[in-house]
Image (cartoon, rainbow, N blue to C red):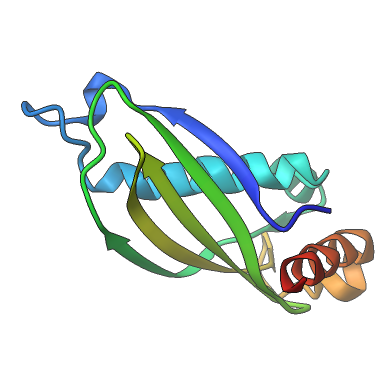
Length: 141
């Protein structure tokens, strides 16, 4: 399994200001788009968890804006899992636009039941946990 997942987002005009510079809030949305695409790619999209009564809320974000992305560029989002335990995961994101790195960030997530209570994915979703662990190990090579 590859240690990185690549997602592309075409900057929309409405995501920018009058100078065609992307508004800072959109990078967070693109993190979510890329994370959802990655989870679907590994076979455990959010709909799979929600059908089982599980959600994966964001518990922390760390972001660094390096250079502005602009309309009409295509942004390459590189997603990499950097931590996976039985109850949480942390993902890093690197965004490249116009040949330059424009953003880097991390999001940390836990797993909970929709009605409340922590979910241990190692116990309750061992197939998904093994995918996460193999993704981490691929990144260590």
